[in-house]
Every structure is written in structure tokens, then in C-alpha cells.
Image 1 (cartoon, rainbow, N blue to C red):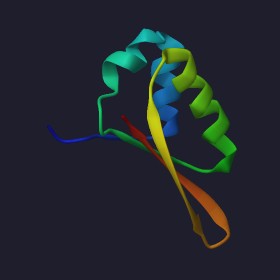
Image 2 (image 1 turned 120 degrees about the horizontal axis):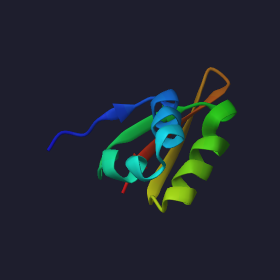
Image 3 (image 1 turned 180 degrees about the vertical axis):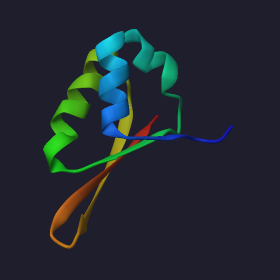
Image 4 (image 1 turned 180 degrees about the horizontal axis):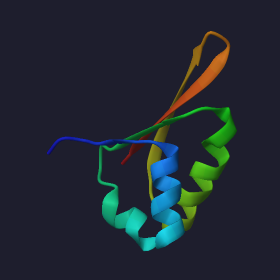
Amino acid sequence: MASTTYSVDQIRQIYSVLPSHVNERLKKGDKVYTDDKSIDQLKNIFVACGIVYDQKTTDVAGLNVHEITIS
């Protein structure tokens, strides 16, 4: 099964409609990319939904890019 890449805005929208839909939509291997501005909110959503994830941070031209992989 192919993994899907989501934006932070897509996760926020799903969470605002019905938080349980985040668990239904995200599958193992799906990814979300974000910057420092949105990482804390994204982590809070995942914690509230009980989603386990791995985080990898890369510095790109002085800006952190966070790759979140659902595990």
C-alpha cells in the first residue's frame, strides 16, 4: 500500500471536523512535512489522537524542515 503525504493544513482541517477522523485517515508510513512554526500544533494533535510517529529534522538553508512519519 502506498503512503500518502499530507500538509499540516489538511491535518488541521480533518481534526477540526472530527478528531477521530485523523486516526481513520492516517495510516502507517504516511508523512507530514512542516516547519518550526507548525510542529508544536501538529504534535499536540497527534498526542490528542494517540498517534505514534517518528520525527526527522533537517536543516535546509537555516530553516528546520520536520518530516513526520506515522508509525
